Image (cartoon, rainbow over all chains, first blue to last red; front, side):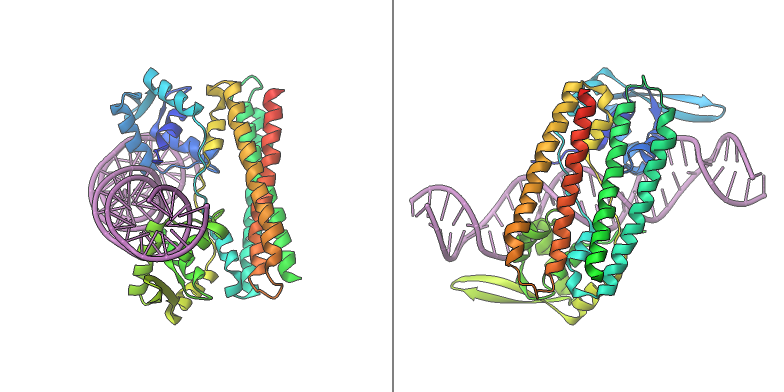
Length: 180
Length: 180
DNA sequence: TTGAACATGTAAACGGTTACATGATTTA
DNA sequence: TAAATCATGTAACCGTTTACATGTTCAA
């Protein structure tokens, strides 16, 4: 089965409700989906060009003073293609977790070194979880109850929190096991 | 920061304790690390060649009947490079979860479609968790207590189980939220 | 006036996968 | 004798990232 490029759908989804510039798309991804979906500039701008050629988006330049911003709007063809992808089963991408790989090879190094990795991971997870909880407690309550996106943003955010919670529990367990 | 190729270390780790063929490395990855680390044949064979050129591994052909198998052995240089990687902090790779992306855009589709995705995800997670538990209950008890790898295999396996447990809990919560 | 953020893009390199190619051995 | 598994490899393609390139606007 051939792997298809999903960057196009991530971008189409970001402009489904309202037109945005490439830079805006980048910013929104960074602040909302970065935990489960990221794109670099170097994939957003060229993909917008491809989408325009495919007639999935239309662009117009808007000026604020001298500075122009290219605003992209989804077309009906783009909406059709996006919606069709939305109905297609989600595929699981191959995961690559370097910490687990290093731990799997733990017998080739010292207990001390293994503990360093685990403790660093624990700190990272605690930090990440805190960041998500802050979004949950500060940003989410500002969104109006009638915003149809709210429930979905809550769900994806909750996924991040629960994931790090689980990782924290597992890491603590591993540290205990190694120290004992 | 430039991304470095980690396939080499995954391979070196697999032959650290005893020499193996490319095919064997592939099989072991499939049965032991596939949940957090995978490599395709097309990356293992060429990388073994590169590692040989770098003098990190040595190969000799062993015959069972007419069929030859190329067995790779790690050199002291290879061990040195592997151990140095083992001490280096683990990097987090960019995660890409298509299910979460589709759910994030949930407002653009029907409740019914969102529920289909969630239920399919739930089934998958339950299945995967069961597979891991089977390994934990059937395969792990066969490994001798004095095998230094055992504790690490237990930890990485437990990570998989706890991950899917957390995903199951989250997915059920989402389904309830959507249905209510 | 300097640095941060806004804003858009390209070229080259890299990593990984798919598909292709080949043939031996074992098991049903 | 056919299918599955063992066993090794290459070429082409694709997607992504890094590094480069350029310039504006705003706030400290």
